[in-house]
Image (tube, rainbow, N blue to C red; front, side, top):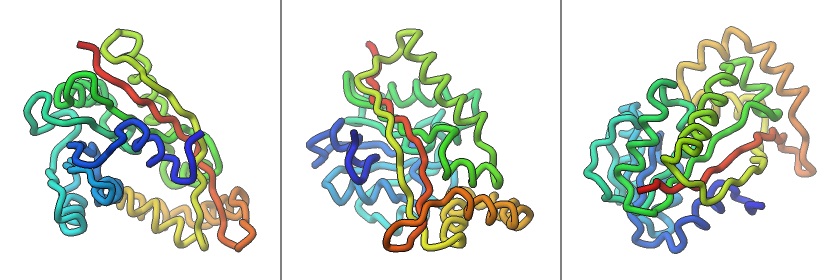
Length: 229
């Protein structure tokens, strides 16, 4: 089982040592993962279709390189990275472009190097509250389906699959709402419209820790793949 920081445990195990590795963070957002990778010595490049998020990432991680681009059209030469990571991002790619996004990752990664896909499943207490703001049941299932398809078709080989539960701590409902709106600002309208229902669900599903913060659980699935050549 992955340890306390489950996502980073999966990533470091696949790339160890991370120092000086050329890693592409696909769907980098504001650079949260990129910062962690950079702190561990990786040479990080990030891409995201959201220009505002890319600008934040550039300011936050001066040592990184960040580009505004979609996962299905990466602006890089063939075989120029030591690995690529989709961290909670594949299900945000338009469904018809998900397969192309995986093929693009295979194109820009050096032979036999890891491509990691970390995705939330459509279950758990975090999801039960989130779905009142944005129901991702379909897109999360679509992401898993396309991963299964590229494995069945022999495009990729699976090195490892890890299922685990991410436990996220929040001081209150407002912190949870800030977290989910930061991921997708378009959720702000739905938060306002459905606030009473979201608050009721948060109080129903959140567990209270011994030191008082509330915990929501999100089951995750990580695939470590490599492209077949």
